[in-house]
Length: 290
Image (tube, rainbow, N blue to C red):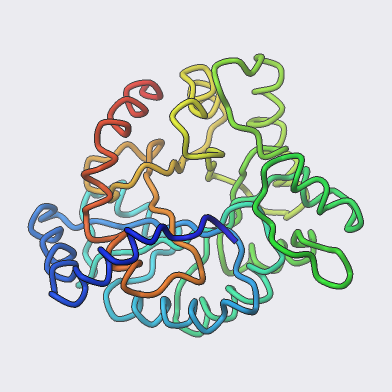
């Protein structure tokens, strides 16, 4: 699982939901973006104990958003207009966790959404008996291990996902791409990891996801390598809609976890977090621009 909700945020989210403020702010975004927009959320683990809460979140998404396929995203970026009657929603999952395949994927498909799964190649390569230690060593929020010890999806499961969903690169070793990372390591984490992922899932990989949301986990040199590698899209975690003029190499996501109540989900997507993150987002976008 990802981070727990702070009590203050939970209370504020409940208050804004009860008074209708969160819903009004969510609707107001359609006025701010007359050419339409897409929201992007990211999850970590989706364990069985959170399945009911995640299903309630999915029902909320189905009521307020339209699914986004790779073709939909390509058309939006090309035409700079979202044509569906409701805003789009990309639901992404970090770290290649087995619970995303076992729990999240059936619910995504029940509600008609495409999942975007960002995978650290080295974690999937690790034998099941060593995955828990690997997760601890590489800051992967994997949760409790099942009886067989396997925390990561298998390559067979990822190949299955890639036939109907999106599998993207999340570096090789879940590495934060800070300015101190040497060039050869950047090449392996961004370029070679992508080639290995494509070979294992037998599909092209055109999406990259940065690791970590901290400002220091981004760097200008890593951004240059990501662009040079030929990815079409790069995903970050700095809270903003994907709008008509957004750089597709700076797609921002909003963190949500599977056990959070819908009031908090509504709050996260209301635009309040966008405003709070605006200064940091501006600095990261400037750092990683062309």
